Amino acid sequence: MVKIITDSTSDLTPEIARELGVTMLPLTVMFGTESYREQIDITPAEFFDKLVKSKVFPTTSGLSAGAYAEAYDKAAEESNEVLVLTLSKKLSTTAESAITALELRKRKDCRVEVIDTNTVVSGLGLLVIMAAEEARHGANLDQLVESVKKYIPKVQIRICFDTLEYLHRGGRIGSAQAFLGSMLKINPIVGVIDGVVEGVTRTRNWGKALDWLYDYTKGYQNNIKMLAVEHSAIDDEAEAFVNRLGQIFPREKIHRFAFGPVVGAHIGPHAIGVVLLEQA
Image 1 (tube, helix red, strand yellow):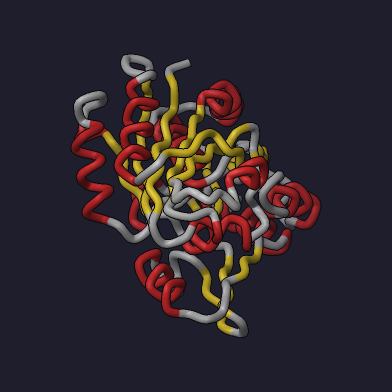
Image 2 (cartoon, rainbow, N blue to C red):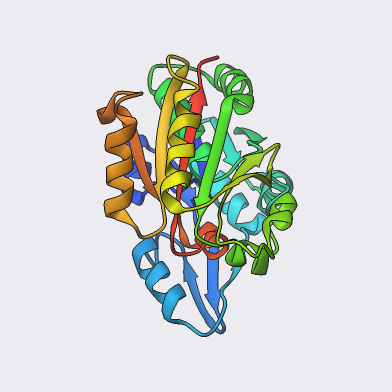
């Protein structure tokens, strides 16, 4: 069976990764000299609590080529076909490390294919879940590569925030920069579009932001293959929003994830996002 490797910005939980048989390599978040591997040394809940209380703004670090090469060699012990799905190269050097590692691995007898998914968070996570399920049903590496590439353009991500300050300080704000400095209290909505963060719209309050996300998702009704809701340390609000989306898509099939520390450092402590995979 094809072995699948991804990184922790997919926001899959360790439990889901184990269940799927997926290797998830951890990126790192740092508060000054304190370093944490996400999903290993610190949970999303612990991170957001620390983010609110800390006077130090966190920084993040991508994966090294050496970490990938080691993972490739270990995967080669289980399979002769490996699929690597990375976050967008426009957001991190991690994708480049995955490519560089192809020359560093010791086990060259194993075929490894690396795909930059041009997305992040559970946009990446849903592609990983889809690929893992297809692998379980017997798809070979060529079939998985074809399937993932077909669905990459079908990933849609929209996230609403209380503030863009964290995105601004983290340097990942993209065109959403235009939303900063408004005299009005706004709740901006951004998307991950063509691999980068782009401003989409802004609403006057949190309730209207959630209404916008709901209406946006409803626009894809009957054309949704997979759906996820992500949040940063607001479980009750996220659960209520999942219940609301149950009018559009079977509630029991909606995946629920928490933004991990590396992405959470840019998103901040009060955000909800919808991530959907359109039918091809």
